[in-house]
Amino acid sequence: MLTPQWLDQLRSRITLSALIGRTTRLQKAGREYKACCPFHNEKSPSFTVNDEKGFYHCFGCSAHGDAIRWMTDHQGLSFMDAVKELAAEAGMDVPAPDPRAAQAAEKRDTLHDVTAAAQAWFKQGLTAPQGGPARAYLATRGFDARTVERFGFGYAPDDRQALKRALERFPEAMLIEAGLLIEVEGRDPYDRFRGRLMLPIEDARGRVIAFGGRILAKGKTDAPKYLNSPDTPLFDKGRTLYNLHRAAPAARNSGRLVVVEGYMDVIALAAAGIDEAVAPLGTALTEHQIELLWRRVETPILCFDGDAAGQRAAMRAISRALPLLKPAHSLRIARLPEGLDPDDLIKAKGPRAMEALLAEARSLVDVLWESERDAQPLVTPEDKAGLKARLMAHVDAIQHPDIANLYRRELQDRYAAFAFPRRENRWQPDQARPAFSGRQGGQRGNWKDRPAPSTPESLKRLRHAASGGARDGLSAAVLAGLIRWPAELPRHAETLARTPGLDPRFFVLLECCDAAAALESGMLATILLDNGLEVPGAAEYSGLRFGFLTGDARADQAAAELAQAVDLLVERPALEAALAQATMRFENELTEDAFAEQQRLLKRKLEFDVRLRQMATRQAG
Image 1 (cartoon, rainbow, N blue to C red):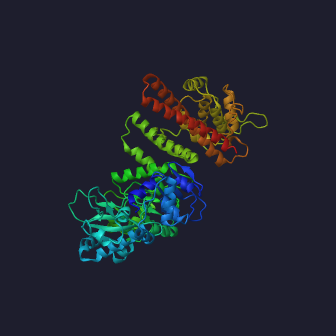
Image 2: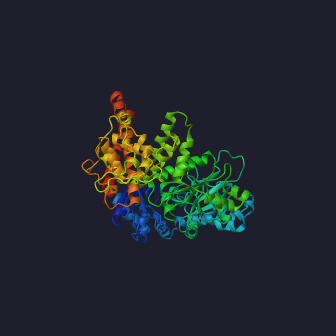
Image 3: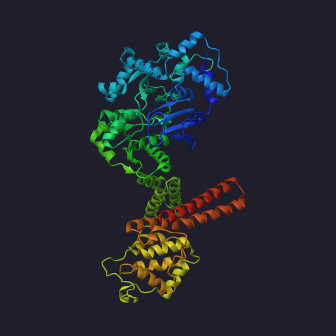
């Protein structure tokens, strides 16, 4: 007879990715493998294989199972033929079959049959006399009969053997495998859900795969308020979103998908007419769930409570999402008033208040900036430097290079405005004044309308401030870009002025920002020459073919690419200084922590060099 223990041993000896990889092309993706689903036609991969958990899962059609299920559903084998083939591969002997057991196995029910039968029994329990406490609780929530029926509420009596007796037609092992019974060594298995209001958890096809239960008895402090089924062959809580099968059609109509903290919040929103809501199941939002959301809408809304716990949940979700960000795909965050959940808000102010709150959801970058800015007091320079370090650590987690660069620039701009508030509008030229015409016909322009050359004292001060300034390819390319696109110089002036170790020519150009005349390329080149400095030429930045240096670059494209190059130029000295300090620390201490810090910064420096090469070649193409 095939016992659950023997079947578990069989599964453990089979590498699922190797089995599936014989007929399906798999690609490594972290700890998992991805592929286009072999069970339905699709253009982008939504089928994953996890060897650690021994499951495969498709986010598109919800195909889910283990090695045996693969052999029966994909290869078309019967259960026993699948077991025999896998056992032969694993070098295991199949136990001698009992003819009667073999006959029963051919007719045996699936786990879906078990969970469906359990759901029918729970629903019956809600209407029975013993379901009074559950009905009373539902009345306090204000759920009408349609909502109760639609979401399949039920009741599990406070009896350790009630469900086991009711579903005795199923083998005990199947009830355990479905997560309905708890198996303890040396004791009879007993019901997992007791004295609870029950809710079915369904897959994308609407089939019951698991359950959630809310305790009803007051004063049971040793029992969790909410209890969900454990992971089973049908149910993986990190890959499942409650109510997705109902919310997805509604999201196609509204273009919106709302993520709330629990399934009771989902039901409260649905009762108020907001049908496109889902919830994770007892865990923080996972990477798989974020991808699942993005398959439905590009920017789902996460709705969290306004208290500290909700703030932490928002930051956990943001941290999970940052490495996954891709063009046009992000998150928005809506924060409820402190002390209120969606049901409270709707009861107090009506559905329109909830709609208004969702409409005002903040962008991910807004919430990231505000959360880190408000996380700690920012009194000392060290406090403020810590804020910048935290922000840049978040940026480093973003894998998409263009999005990372845009986040870096956005957060650096916000940090600069916060840490270095502008005392005067020094860098903005007066656009109302006539522009200097530069060199025309080989003659110099109108000298009285252009900025005067820097005085010797000014040049001495600037060169002293830039002593040791780096004259390299990146610096020269940015200088040439600013000269070619002079209107961009005021935009980057403050950032460059605060950057140590720059090429002295930057500081001469920054002096021009005080001019009354609008800046032009010829004027900036002339200023450098008049002060005895070279105009950067192609020989200085050979190999860095930035798009903003080409003759056919559009103004908006050049501005964006030049901003990214300035970001790299500003980031480099801080990174190199940190790496040098970490290297010195390691040489002096020779500790594991010092070595790890040095290696982390060395990796960041190598990634920086790769970003520079990619940007300087990609943008020129």
